[in-house]
Length: 79
Image (cartoon, rainbow, N blue to C red; front, side, top):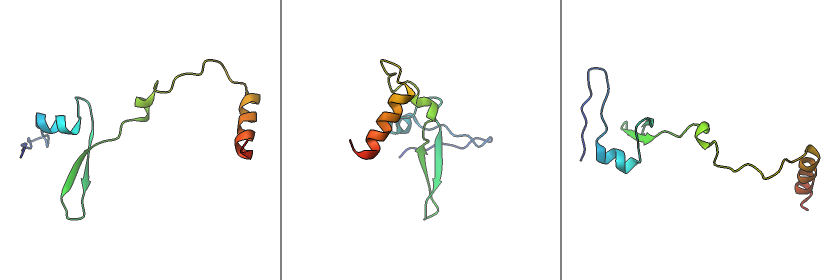
């Protein structure tokens, strides 16, 4: 079992093993979720949408509005 002490400012240091198990690194955020029994669960907070920047590659070529319209129409008709 891991324990931490609350400082006078309300801060705690999450033990190294717990950080590792949770995949937390410096700068990560955590959420405190109140459970039905009154206890709290500490879980990694979702990352910002900004963290997704760059994971989808840019297309090789520009797509015209006419091409986009044609693709949407073909998708709507199931072609």
